[in-house]
Length: 304
Image (cartoon, rainbow, N blue to C red; front, top):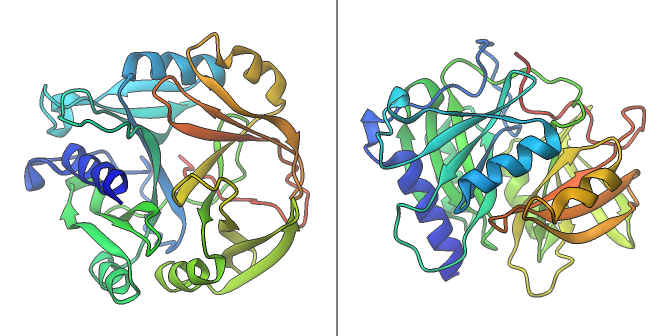
């Protein structure tokens, strides 16, 4: 619990220091006025190797990094960058080096859209979760809270000011899917089903384990699966769509990362691999056929 709480606290300090004075860009540069509760709309990377991580993702996926600094009220002491893919905003990168910490805490943290963030944190508390940071306004971004589910998986909640990004088909190099590796799939289903206001769930057999998909009728939003790594705390795992994992895996070590799981066929379809960037933050690679009936279609975060 100690490391999970430190991660959440650091994430909150970086993004929320200065409270009302902090301004972060919206998750979509095109206002939509949409509220898509339960959709993952943003991803933030906490890293202690910002320069190496930037080169890593730029070389592998063509991502572009734009340091915001004073422009959005963060000042010179906290380094926050936004990440673009083909010009579209897809996420952010937090430099943890100037903050005191002793644990290795680099990781990706997804942000889930909620229509009423104050009601959402009450839902978290009533259902056994932890609210590390209460709803805090970040100007253009909207309202943000940092929570953990009852098993400790950390998640950001965001109520956007200008609307959530529209659904679109994920392109190669985009974020594709997000799932929770949990110790109790049924308990996690109850927790996130209420929090995300999901109207449908689907069970499929994947790699000899039950895989649960939560979302709306034709719009899968998140996946839940029994934690496959015994020594790993429950965690959110983010996937990037790739055309072929082989050439990416061939460059991971060269760019300072690690290959945690070599490419293999996945029960849900396609090939999957797991890598870590130079800071140790893990992220999954997934090939994907958008014509599959059971697939994470139309779940990418941004359409600008």
